[in-house]
Amino acid sequence: MGRAELHEQAVVCQALGLGDHVDVEYEDDGWDSRVYLVNRGEAVFKFPRSPQAKLQYRREVRVLDALQTIDSPILVPHVEWRGTDLEWFGYRGIVGEQLSYRLSHLHANTKRSIGRSVGRFLRELHARRIDGLPVVSVDGEIAHYQEKYRLGLPALDVLTASERAMMQAFFFDNLPNALRDLRGELRLTHGDLGPWNIILTDDGEVGVIDFGDVSYQDPSKDFSGFGDETIFDAALAATGLTTGCAKRHGSGSRHFRYWTFRSISANATWPESRYVSTLLVV
Image (cartoon, rainbow, N blue to C red; front, side, top):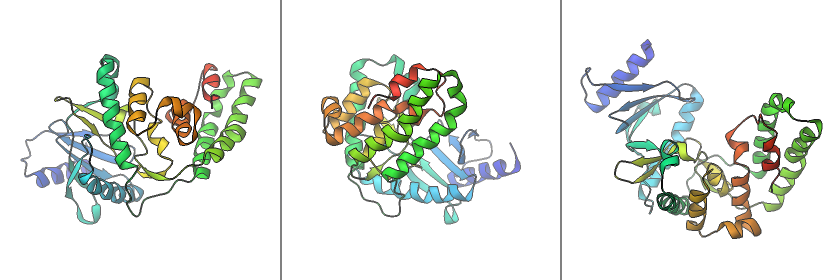
């Protein structure tokens, strides 16, 4: 651990009134932040790796403060400690395990319960208005997917020429046309919701963490990480939509398209040609 990390650890101990002997867990895998956890995440502190991360903190803290009054069964972190000019901040965390670690062991009824809770949370979140947050337009969304395509180009060498042509047509013709036709109202979205940011507590409660990517965009973005169909169906139904209408009608089809395109947002490369048929489903 370097000098900066030792200083930050001391800041954490001072904020919590802890002695130097207390074990503070340091997580070095954060892209934007250096993260410190106390007692399995009862307290979580974030220190920025860049000036851009500090701007993200301002958005994240503003949203977390606003969500303390949300009418939802979902737990969200509570910001309790703030450095000067948000040089760092800390929150009361949600102690538990990521849904991604437990997903394969859950009963279908448990998955449906989680999906309903997440769907109710999203219904409330998408109805909120919070000033000063980024806006992602349809054209911005299209540009994002096209950039993912460009990043994945080296992996497309395993595809045939006709498959590569299909992929290019999908990202530069079919997908842009479909998104512009579907349009949709921009709503407040979590922006990075999936099993990796959903926490299951030891008491069976469900929490959502990591609001650093919050923005206004098509609300179906918040369904893009649900690879599990049982959770997806329950979450979508709890928002007032169903997968049946999602496959057939208006705003619902926007939600369905993100579920179908989840491989695009989750991966920058697609090493197997079998993805072509999946990504071409609209």
